[in-house]
Length: 213
Ligand SMILES: Cc1cc2nc3c(=O)[nH]c(=O)nc-3n(C[C@H](O)[C@H](O)[C@H](O)COP(=O)(O)O)c2cc1C
Image (spheres, helix red, strand yellow):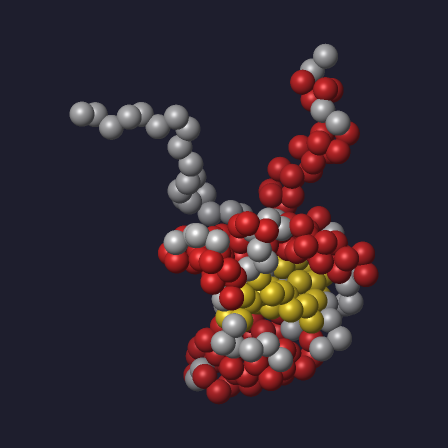
């Protein structure tokens, strides 16, 4: 009997699905028009709810925009026009055409109050910041992989400095507590990503040799 035969069905399914999803996930910046099926939204909200964070906290607030997405993109375009000029503005606006057809936009905020919660539980301040940021990375990856699994394309954008203020009235989130960290346009893919960077550092070491003394 192979070792996988001893695993429960759910565990074997996960074992084969996860590497394929990691392989399929890419940055898809050009999206096609279209609403997302409700099952995709449900899968994404489930992924957010199941994402792990330190000590059972929720260091993120993910604002999902479906019906209000046109309003959002109008704010983004205005922010670009208010903050950029010339060739840079043209480049940002050209890219915006690929994003604004997204059926769903996830705005990722950090809940700064969670840093204080962690500190109140004895976590040093610097580590509380790390834990929050690690949680934010994990939830973004969960959203990205879930979108991929649903046959959708997504990317991570960072128009934070230009958008945080204009978005405050739009979301109603108090900026003293919530810090904008990323925007994820999610939708029907309308591009085939190029090959991955072959020169990228692999980023892992197996059984490192001890330093010579
Ligand atoms: C933390 C982080 C920040 C990123 N910021 C941006 C960004 O601001 N704009 C963008 O288009 N892509 C952004 N990316 C996407 C990376 O450029 C992309 O993941 C990388 O080039 C590998 O390509 P792939 O996603 O297709 O595998 C970001 C990715 C990560 C993980």
